[in-house]
Image (cartoon, rainbow, N blue to C red; front, side, top):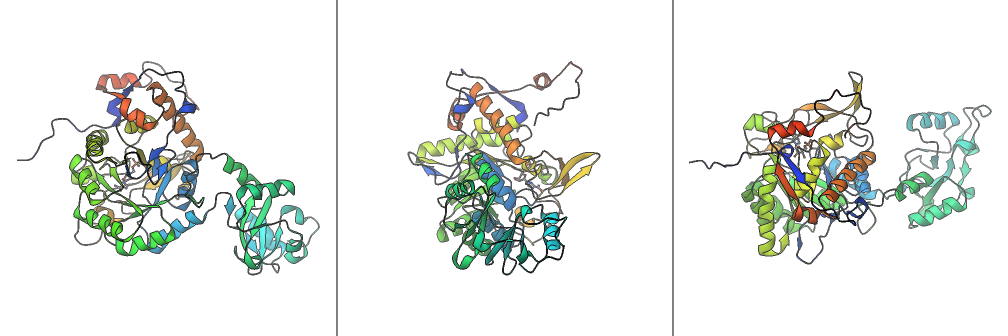
Length: 499
Ligand code: RVP
């Protein structure tokens, strides 16, 4: 006979946190959101920790190299989507690893033979007013000069004037040598009152440009998630089909951590994939998704460095409707956390849990952490920002961004839903949708993290570990849910949105 669970499967909205005593030192400024990303032994430190408990979903509409840089800059991690050709995914990883905070590869380049008309044309296209002049017009060519707005006068100079006649030539340029630190570069920028410092390698090759404004931005990101070489940390999605080709390429590109991306991770395919990676590479690997104790322990015993929880709760996910599998995210987390804590007591090995999908309100993140998650993975949340890879459109007079599920016809990521049969997507498990455009990642993250910290202070917790230990959580009744929002008043239009 089938096993029946006595408790219904519940989700975040059905729970609330009850405040604990807030001591005077428990202020948002004293709250740390640092959290382990990968497993570690009692008394030791994890090889990788996040500075904020946020990861962006392994999705075409969410995690490309731009998102990865922006999120790592704020202290979290992106997992670059794996539903693309291997070389393209590896290239995105390479771009993140090659991105030096503050050092940018020049994106507007011309040769000395180009003309003022070409300069104006490129400026119009890119919006960059500083252009590098190289022998071959590429970002890594021999640097021959720089053109900035003050080098020409549109009213006087003829449009066919060659760049060689008005650029600031290499011999008069202030430049830095490759290997210089960002703060040394900044000193040169200040000393010489310039806005842009080219960084030059052997044979006068242009390597990077450092802009005054980027240095300021760098100082605004104290939480940056960097590896030992000061490159941003990045993750990448893999599947259980082509891992023998995909993993070597991703490791070679510099991926710090991999994750097997699957809607149902309780499978021998996942075990084989983890064991292959562990036997051949020194790279961390997370696995999932599972929703119960058995699935969790299976992946842990297979060697997973973290485990991802959640089936069917994603905003664009229709797996529950299509296949009738899944579980409320809160119930999954509560059961898996218990298994994780017991495993820790028995073995002294702590396995981080990632709560994936179904975060609708910011407070759901705090609840997920209180219920035992070490970090969350979000798709919809990040899809709304400038940094997500999709188009921003105006629909019914509102700005929106496109957002589609990996199981939708649009993404055709059949490997994620693969049950070992024929390759190809037989039916959809995700939808194609819009999400309201919400602006920049940094601004939104600041707002969300300040809410989390504030709630943690209410709960008397200065760290996520403390919150997991001390939180008191209650189920809410359907009637008290109504009382939780504004009620029995006539709402005025408000410009201040909740999220
Ligand atoms: P959400 O944050 O609620 O948008 O959920 C994102 C999660 O949804 C992903 O991390 C993934 O686990 C899941 N997903 C992605 N595509 C699909 C689908 O098409 N069904 N589901």
